Length: 251
Image (cartoon, rainbow, N blue to C red; front, side, top):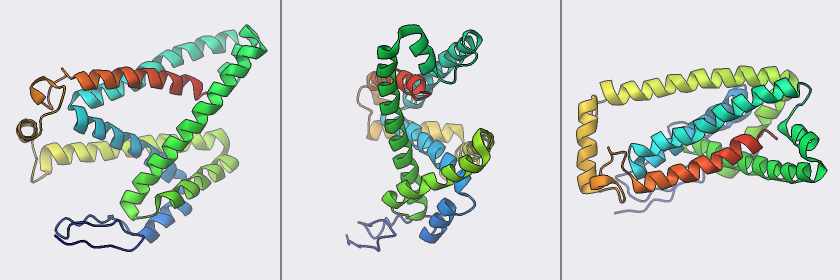
């Protein structure tokens, strides 16, 4: 067992037989962040961070993890979309829900919700920046701290010159590209991969993994069950937290 300390651009490697290096160079990473691709990079890494998070809960709780992760993030969006339609009908000149709060409940309540909304925006921004920077760092070796400061530059520039139309267009492109990535991953894992290659093989390997490393709180320690105590707890935390995120982030 040997220990190798690499340069600052590359991650430190502990085992010589298990070297993990970024697939792209550090210079390429800076080019993505600061170059023409910056406008697309920010949305891509943020959404990729969400994919990493859903994969992490799948690893921790089995199939129930990503199911509860998605469920806890979609309920609020549906409710807020319905509420937004009604708000626009009753208050067509309002720009945010905070204006409606002020008109309905007064200045004191408005100040409270402004504070909540500001704190939520700060926390969400910090979460997305650090998560997106971690993705860029894993892919290219760019230091996470540097990526945190450089990633917003692209968003500021295309929003400054393109306005809200630019944000809609880039979000649309991000979504299309993320769907392509998901489809590539899915077909690779379930159709073409040498280790996996079929749903049956994936099922068998997950069953073996449960025998070797059972999931605490899952029925039979299985990764393939929805009967998961920790998964249910995560769902409650996720859905409550996302209500605050989805509603207050619009402030």
